[in-house]
Length: 193
Image 1 (cartoon, rainbow, N blue to C red):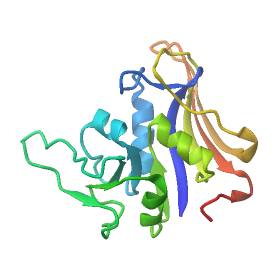
Image 2 (image 1 turned 90 degrees about the vertical axis):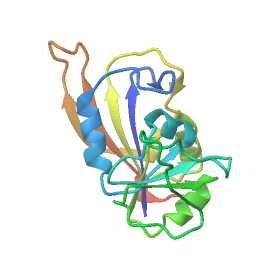
Image 3 (image 1 turned 180 degrees about the vertical axis):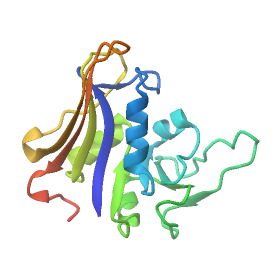
């Protein structure tokens, strides 16, 4: 199983403010959807609550230390069904919510999938990187500083090699540019193997 982090990161490391994005970047949202569609996405509870719905076409796994946590009902008031670890999981493209209480259990649970995306927040990124659980970083590197209260963790750049970069320069409508960048773990060794 390949474990990839997907994140948009400002020049000063900021990834969020008040549980939302500090920028409006439709190209990044489209890139995120294209990258993750059909695969399981793993996120912290706060990240899920900022989205406030399961991402369509993806199995949504929410990490919460509270095993009784449940998502808020749908807009029409219908309760959202939840699969809890260690129950059987549907296909990765099934729009469903699952919960687990810790990252190692969640990754073990997801081991039958070819690819899993970690989509936030900063605590999940930090835990995955510090435990060497990440095979790939897929970052939108924004060439602008932003104010925020959540940052992407420091990571050992020597452990990863840039494999792809798509440059998106500034435009008359947007004073700053951004790049879609992929970094693969060097020699692809990680603690989960």
